[in-house]
Image 1: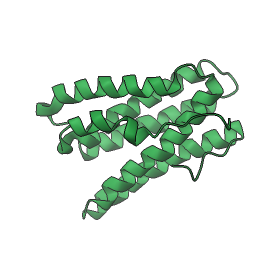
Image 2: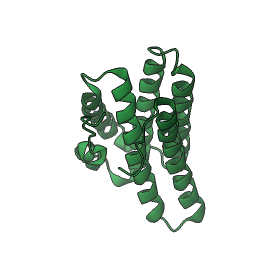
Image 3: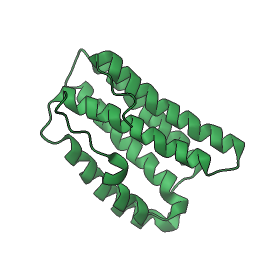
Length: 162
């Protein structure tokens, strides 16, 4: 794992993210979380040993998406922009895992979770609405919970590198 190159996911996804109008960015990220849930489920089908924990990670991703969409869904007038940005983001994201064995893919995803938690913390810092702030912080906590599960399941340490 020392040679494993961890992408800077915020930089990787910057172009598609900034193409989305600000009012729909949380909803856009929610849809990206659903892509992560799908990835976890795919990986669970490849590893009986890790399946239960990966399914739990997938469930957390779906919970993040559900809660984020409740907070700030994609506005109807932004649907086409979000659809295009999401396709681009998914392609970029998939490239980060290409050519890696399952173990490394999961480790990369743990890093992505920690990096993703920082986005929710950023949204929390930008609102004066205390309930919304707490909800964004809860989303960050769910991201970190998946990363911590991966650390434990694989016997790796991905913390402190976000």
